[in-house]
Amino acid sequence: MIYRISRSIVRFFLAVLFRLKASGTENVPATGAVILCANHISNLDPPVLAAPLNRKVYFMAKVELFKNPIFSRLITYYGAFPVNRGGVSKSSIRKALELLEEQQVICIFPEGTRRGGTGKKGAASLALRSGAVVIPVHLKGSYRLFRPFHVIYGKPVDLSEFADDESPDRLDKATEKIMAAIRNAGEEV
Image (tube, rainbow, N blue to C red; front, side, top):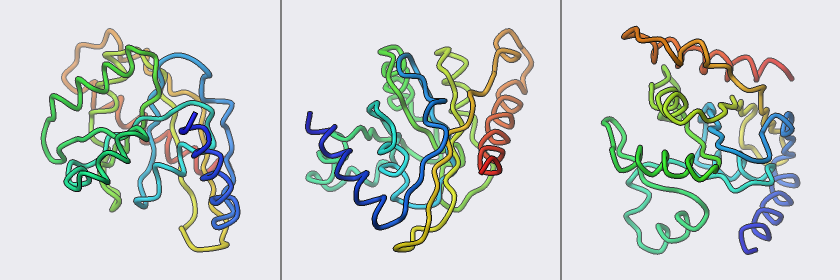
């Protein structure tokens, strides 16, 4: 209940302050396990990605954000869970797989940083292990007051070709397919 009310308030403020427009929300399944894979440009990305959707979205967030106990409680309530950057975080992977098993929506920024870069293999690995639907999301614009900002939810990425692939580079290929879909979603508008 509080989450839904908060989401409505955030939607209103994002529409007014950032002229937020969302396209392709119909591509996000109403039920089932979903992994949103997005480019990452600001700390504002999580609420901007989650607000247009009618499902709660859980986010992997850098562990440093959980150092302040009050802020930690707040972001945990709104769906964040910690991940250690730069290394494998077994507890984060376990938490993500649990959420997907519970048919929830999680969001991952495959680049792992707001500075861009190549995609990391975690999203592809989680998708192939869980069978979750992968939705590419492209954030387009800058967070400048009263300037248009667009969130584009692309069509699901078909990773079935990698399901039975035993090659050592299958996660690299699946990750590149996800990253290409994120870039292509930005060109749809």
